Amino acid sequence: MTQTIRAAVLREVGAPLQIEQIELTDPRAGEVMVEIEAAGVCHSDLHYLQGDLQCPLPVVPGHEGAGRVISVGPGTSGDISVGDRVALLWRPNCGRCAQCVAGKPIMCELGPVQARSGGLLDGTTRMSADGAPVHHLLGVSCFSERVVVPERSVVRVPDDIPAEIAAIAGCAVITGVGAIRNAIGACSGDPLVVMGAGGVGLAAIMGARLAGASPVIAVDVDTDKLALAARVGAAITIDARDGDVVEHVLAAVPGGAAWVVEAIGRPETVASAFSMLRPGGTVVAVGLGRVGQGFTVPINELVQRQKRIVGSLYGSSIPQLDLPRIFELYRAGHLPLDLLLGERYPLDRVGDSFDALRGGAVGRSIVYPNR
Ligand code: APR
Ligand code: ZN
Ligand code: ZN
Image (cartoon, rainbow, N blue to C red):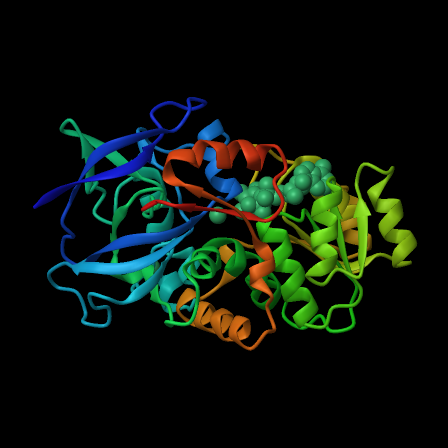
């Protein structure tokens, strides 16, 4: 069976998102249909809108969402039922490939396949318009009233967690907090810098504070974002417009930072992150850049100071374990995620939410696809 839904559709890179009526078919084997309650506006969506990252078009963007299961396909496990509240995951996990078996579901071999095909796990789409396929963004596409996703790409959300919090937990929060917990681990008492105080960076600051990093230093180019960074736990804030960021960090923590989480994704900021490390320090690169973009690593500094650079995707997490933990930390007051929430938009104004993101909106914007 097919139903008509309203969704934001990107038909051409650089073109405005259009709110369209499109067709959504019932979930197939191992899939569920979710009515979206809230969706976060992430910079990675903007990368796709601008063509920094590429996916098949037309596509319904949005990859940070939460909602309620309204139907389940044949052959589902029984773990997820109609009525369950769920957060959506933008990386699939097959549970069978070597990476999944090794406990690294974010590196599941189906991840790049799903991202490139613009379909669900079998490569086909459940959305169409005038008989032509409309693609899924990262298997989620939550700027839409309803979505069909693989059952393994949802995590149950407790009733007392607001939909907005569940939504942002599924990308910004798990990415930022996970970078600290999973890519860094023990950092208590170590100086840690977070570059970029967007949704991801702010979550990393909260995670770093929780892990006891000290001091936690935030770097951004926006006064209001730095003020928010201080509220969520940065002891020191540095405005990158005020001269040399590396010098500022070295003045604050002589010898340099033990850890730098880079949540911007620009060649020059990753290079600065590397320069501000103390010997033996590590850059955890979280921000995505344009396809093919790189930066220069000074070889001798790498070797003689034993510096390290590691990438971390999706918080290097095991979402089925990390998301429930994040919900518990939020509930216990250890992660002040409400402070992350910014402006709210109905689906009709999703385009405005991206203009605001480009313009430096503070906090994570939330889109309500059913309002
Ligand atoms: N120096 C310091 N901060 C900067 C600079 C710079 N040169 N340029 C941009 N910033 C800040 C912005 O002001 C903003 O606060 O980086 C932050 C980026 O935040 P968002 O745009 O909200 O992006 P976010 O959704 O947090 O994602 C960050 O992670 O997953 C990736 O694709 C995503 O590359 C993106 C990154
Ligand atoms: Zn995201
Ligand atoms: Zn796998």
